[in-house]
Length: 77
Length: 533
Image 1: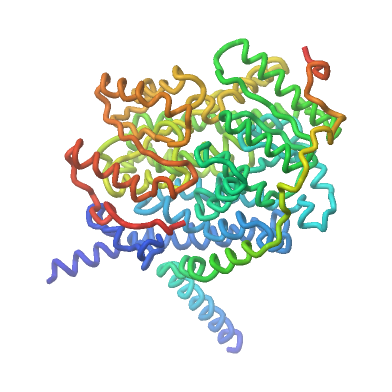
Image 2: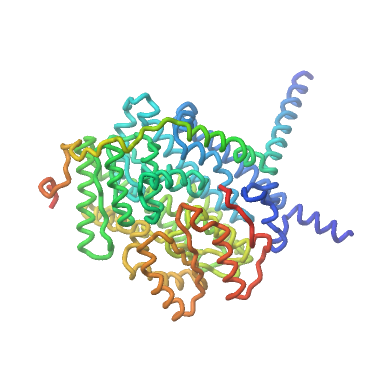
């Protein structure tokens, strides 16, 4: 009897979850949440992130001398 | 009254017929969001809910667990704009591409979207796993076993390393795919590169790719970089910026501007060998021919099935894949090269295709015109094909980019294999046709016949100098051959130059004034979706 009740409860919870998810799907609630809340929040977060100023990085032409793309270095026929 | 009730019940059970759907009424303002998702009848609505919406949200979570786990994914989400802002909205990318689709078309097209989603997750999770920025500056084993390359260098060049190493294109997932999924993200990168002094008129694709580096938003996941001059001189300039900002050993594996000349094959073969030599010097690994053969033969199976699909598309009304799914899937897998997900997807789609042919299912019953889409497409409105079918009955049968890389590669000996790999590499997107000489871009005429199309959607990328130079020749030929062609102006990833609403209005004008036709769904004629993903 107890097992039956627990099983019914689990099935009921699963059915409710399924119906709830269907409502989220049908009324595009995932889209609305992402558009109105998540995306603006993330946008603010990314805009605040500290980033390297890439223009300050020198353009080191000789940084990797082991490989140079020259005719002498081409040993292919 | 009884009749009305019968009709309501019929619409509930089967969904409204094409002419009565009024899909445009479902949108909320300019957001592209839905008041509610489309009711497609009981069977297709629940297919969409169970096998597309639930399945893919679940699949995304499973893929994240499978390819590295939630911790590294959250770290990536907090660090990279292109990831967090874009890919959370993936299911709405499905919505836009699959709007109005029913039955077998809904199923087959959705499998293509699923495959692209899975492969995208695999790629960014691998990037994050190897990324020194997410590991306190440490270079782990993944870092040393990953080759970074330009998105226009095809994955097949690296088949010979697939048993020991991974190759991930630098811009494919951070830039190219984002434009289709959520085109808000890319605008930050275009603005970033212009903020350091680049004028606004070069190709916006190259601008966005360089902007990723200007904003320091590229994971540091490999000790090397292999760039390319594909598709054009703007890509050459981007390679210089890669060299500056990445600050790591870099080689440019250049492609010839023409592809069907024996002299250029030798040149391309040498370029490929040079890249392999570079990898050997920098990473200590040589390509293994047996491994190359293994992956190439698997890839050839994908190409053979593609030919089967094209045959059905060209000669019957039973082709179950819509224009946007066909185009994106084909360009994605041919560029990335063989992955298991493509083979699994093709097996599923083959069953659907066979069913449609055997049972003679007319998959796009409201087709008024069979359209060939030519040149390079607007990335922020790749789903225009879906809109055009729903609104006007324009059915996009084939597009130019799908015809790239169209070669079954030989594997019988190393020399032939390298020759064919070079040919394949030369047939890359845009080089094959758009920027590869006018005789190739004019392959349009034979493809119009081959795919039995009666109309051309001619993409007009406003910032592509190569294609701009050939507009007059096309105009003359269209007139001479009496072909209906609509020019679609766009700026690849940047919706601010030509909006989606403007594109729709150009098509509407042509259909009203030249074709003298009436829309199938008038609610889709004019609506504002400027803020839509």
